[in-house]
Image (cartoon, rainbow, N blue to C red; front, side, top):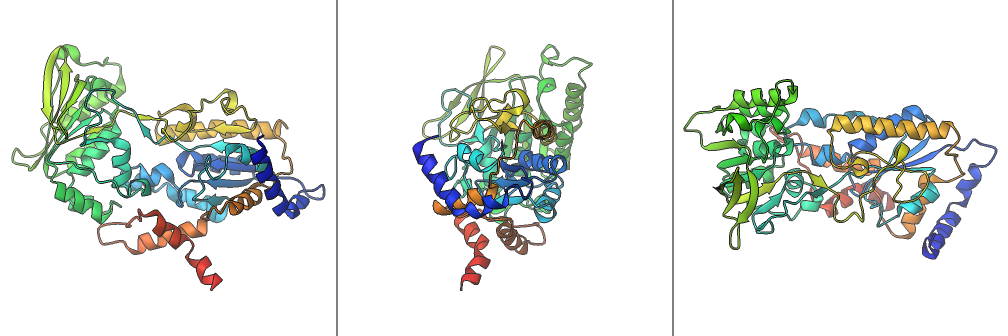
Length: 457
């Protein structure tokens, strides 16, 4: 442990010495567990840990002042059914004694090493916010947008509060996954079709002003190898202002086997929507396959994209290009953390530290798959506690962490603070929108502290 860390921990312990006495022999010591990341992986893990280690004191940290991570900021604004999972997460904080410590950036405000001094277990579930790069000429041109920032902007994420995407009339989306479908659908829906979503009214007005007219979704593989969800493809048939077409590759290029049920379902879904809409529809959505991206063209701004179509050069004109080819470790995270046996983070070389979700195993898998991953890791943690391999060591958990954060003048947001933010967002709902999310971090922090300020007066 560094001398600086040792001094900080010593001061924090002195501030909370009375709490350590409570953990003496007169009272059984309970495990203190810190979860870093209040997104679905972290909160599914919290659910399982509450069930498996019923007496544990569990605290959930997040760098944002609001919980729910990917559910709030990654799931498309018009998929409110998926976002409804937050209701079961709310019960963790409201009924099951789990605490929320928002606006705490682990790695900056408090280190993982410091968490292990206060907690018996640290579980990292911080997700991955970076976007994979194409690695081609022209990728840095103005007008080239990555799916991550664009999706976060559409969802009013505070990190993208000043982001201003220049889309134009012609948008090329590179990628054959559900993120590409989400973006295309939101860009092409009419304001009336966005009714019932939580896409902020200023985002809707911006999209309308951009006048997106043509969207092309381009993939390097065939239609059978695309990673679309067939149900999401079928949703496109509900859009009334677009004409959908599919450029089918030559028969020999369709890359799926008859027994491949996923590929067959994708083919069937694409066939079902091919030709949807009237020829005079104001907008167009086109699917293209077997095109390898070679370069993005333009001088000062995007004008088009060059593709290799089996040795034949093709060019698609574009006012903007969106890359949706998968996620990668955020460049702000020092390193990706591979998970070892039982979920232990070997790269930290610290005991009692675990990872789950994308942060632990890389950017793959749906929310459902990450729920299963969280279950496996938490079962491993619970088993180690039951076997005595992880022993509650008289650590003071959240009290110690909060004392250190207070010493560093880090303002944390508790669950009550989040509820004040949520109430303002929902009170601004309209007949068409279920909430108006606040994207300004300063406004969030002011709202979160509102009752404390009133009490202080």
